[in-house]
Image (cartoon, rainbow, N blue to C red):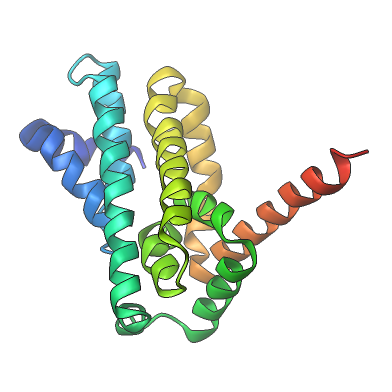
Length: 200
């Protein structure tokens, strides 16, 4: 991870905020660019005084929101066709679709934190026909939280955030199906806390 961040530093020095915007935006429409790595590298550059953390947060949040919004429009316009062209495993896609149907909005937020789910978040929501106003609300919440954790969080608390990153790496390597399972497990725990424990 440190190697990836170091590789991103000269790229950010060359292309600055526009390059950061493009990386995060394009990742949001399903193309696997290293948007999160770029954001984390930008936060570290801001910590060193080479970038402005407020600008990094604003640029990445807007890029994340608009990228997924375009992905939503693509899914709404062409349905599952873009996903089928990506040759996703049919059983994995079925599980993700079931999660969207059952839980809706919270999946939009949680998916931000998992590779694979993050890139295709908007397309799946659009293909599933989620109402646009509902998607946009959760899309905004997810973008702010994601950029807050990996951008602002890394700027203000680098060591704890990097430990969190390393602990999440095994989840990233498990792929789409496992990531979807983790999202469902987290969501189930949250719902149990809210509906059962909190009401006691």
